[in-house]
Structures are given as C-alpha cells and as structure tokens.
Length: 277
Ligand SMILES: O=C(O)C(=O)C[C@]1(C(=O)O)C=C[C@@H](O)C=C1
Picture 1: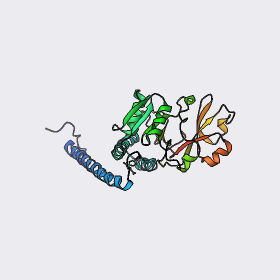
Picture 2: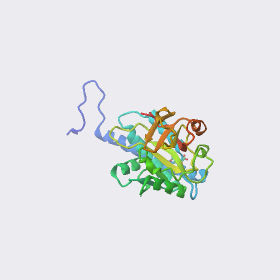
Picture 3: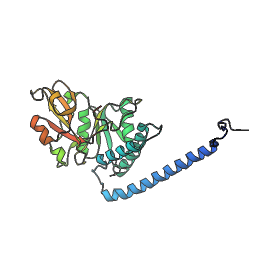
Picture 4: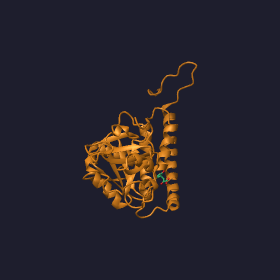
C-alpha cells in the first residue's frame, strides 16, 4: 500500500522524497541543532572565565546582542518568520545570560498578558519577572541591584518621571559612572511580525554596562519653558506629557545640551532596524 502522504510522482520528474526520508532529514537537523546548543553551553563556560562576571556584575552586552541580531536579520530567508528566529535566539541568549549571572526583570504591568508575552519573548522563560508598582520603582530597583533590568514603555505616564532617581547628565554617555542605572537598549530591535503587538520600550540596565551610542535618550522638563517645541529639537521620536517629555536623538550630550541645557541624558542604545518607523 502506498503512503497517502506521499505525493504521486509526475512522469519524467525526480521522485518526491518519502515522508520517512523527510522526517529523517528533520531528525538530523534537530540533532545538529541540539549538539550545537550543547557546544554553545561549553563555550559559555569558558566565556564566564574570560569575562570574569561575578557577584553584582551583569553579563548582558547590548552591543554584542545588537550585532548578533543584525546578522541574523541579514542572513535570514525562507518561510520561518524572522520574529520566530529572533525569539529562539533571545531565548538562547537570555538563558545563557542568566547562567552567567542571574538577574530579574522589573516592569510595571508585567502581570498583564501583553507585557508578560513581550518580556518572555525578549528575555526568555528562565528570567524572573518582577511586577513593579510603577516604572519609577522598576528603574530604582535596577539602580539599587547593580545587576537587574527594568523595562519601561516609551509612552508610560511621563509625569511619574521614572528617570527621577537616575544619576543625571552626560555621565551615562562616557560610562564613567559605576552605580545607578541607564537606558541600554530600545525594543523592538528587529522589525516585528505583524501578528505581534508589543509596545516600544526602553531597557534600563546597570550603569556599568557599556551600551552602543547610536541613539541617546533624553528626559526634558517642558514646564520650565525650555523645549516648548519638541518638534524643532534634533530628535527622531518624542513622547510627551504635560510637563515632561522623552526624546531620542542621534546627538551626543555635549552637542544636545547646547540647544536643550535642561535635558537629562538617560543613556544610549543601538539603533533598532527601521528606526524610526
Ligand atoms: O558575548 C558575551 O559577552 C556573552 O555573554 C554571550 C551572550 C550569548 O549568549 O551569546 C550572552 C549575553 C550577552 O548579552 C551577549 C551574548
């Protein structure tokens, strides 16, 4: 009896592979992927020694992750959605980051399904999620821990001033401060599949993590009369409340502060692909 799943062979064409052969191919691919993951784990063990990650020092390297994600997007092809590939790699990287130095992720609203989905997508299922009472509390917890992360929605209520407890000004850009917290990444980083509905967020990490300086995030007090017209500022994207605003700009603090002396630099990050959309 012929296997009903085996399509008939058209005259003159090569015979279609049998279901058994295709499954053997999938098994071989799975085995290779699994062996490579085990190998990756062994390399990470050596990397821990090389990086000398210890107590109260974070293992994440946003610059390295940005580079990896850009290469993943660059070489991707086929029907598997890029967001699926991104999630698989985020799961792998997130788990190996946890294995190097355990950390928690603080976020307001992490109990909601949408926020939780987003945090699991980017940071994996091994990370401990902390439902913070506010974004300010989430950021303050990171500053106090020296090893955790906070995730803050770009359009979170601005008057809460979640950046209020951060060390101020361009120190973030030079990396000279060793305590506190700063913006180290912006997500989504790769173009998001249309079936996913994740908000634009900042990742806030320990101040001693060196991030990329493609784009800077600034907080601006708008009730002082300064920055009354944000549209004229050299930023790509702004989120504005009645008295405060967040703005992202390619201009480094030294340059940016000339036009907006009251601005507080909150950190910097690798430019997400397709930013701004
Ligand atoms: O390259 C590093 O420094 C690592 O810690 C490895 C690794 C990874 O799993 O690839 C993990 C965490 C970092 O954020 C970046 C990459």
